[in-house]
Length: 363
Figure 1 (spheres, rainbow, N blue to C red):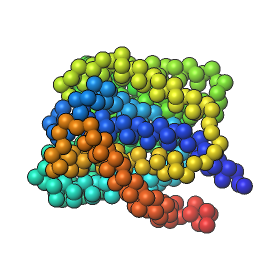
Figure 2: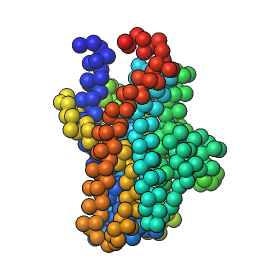
Figure 3: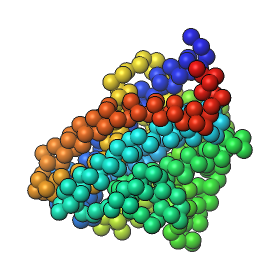
Figure 4: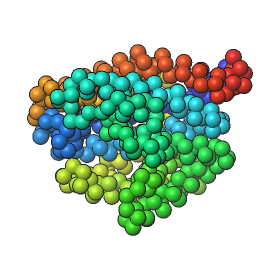
């Protein structure tokens, strides 16, 4: 077995428990939207007065996703230059994004009478071409679904990693940069007001937690890494606390920041254990479930709310859980029929176009 193959096998083995966390977090965020938050902002009548006292805090799973993303992205960046890293990210994200944005567009056009918002053909084109990710231009179009704001944050992270790889500020040094920028952003937030740059960089502490966790999985006895990890977790918790306090302006409900921070601390402890005690057994079903998380997150919200409105679902636990199951099945189909076959094909095409020498060497 070659060194590259061994490294790939190890990375896959290490991702098994993380995939479990990802699919659980994805299902929880769907339940949180369907049982509480989508109804609280007037996007659907579907909700659950029984589940909402607990599910209203499921929004924290988005922070968990960013931590997991930081772990995987730093792992993905190992041994790559900035262009090969960018090719890998484009190939991984573009097929499910196109599939989900297209299905949301078509489905909500068909259910236009029941959708809380409609997007035009130009909006759809801007989504599938990536124009919505370009500062200044993207703000002129509507995102296919409001949950796509996380993709914009992800792309800020990807570009920062690309810049780091280009100037050779990678691994530990890059995580230190993330921590410093996140700290400065947190301090400046109340004085500078809202801006997309401040909003994006404020989330870097979550990525730093994941990235440092990956570094700790390789050097678990490093005191410096543990110190930086503790600082990143503390900075993340400050952001979680403030997010809980400010959320009343979004969903018109009071959130207890102690509960939000406690959930995140438990999730971080679980992820830390998984990172430091990686399993060496491959689980294809769990790997598939982990892959379903991205299309599930992208497809569930607007399309799901439109279907629920068309079906007349109101305050109903079976309705919320049934819609969650429906979206899970739909996301599984997208992942199995579109994402899994198209991602490697797109990667090969991009490698031939942008990395011809490496593509020829790999052949």
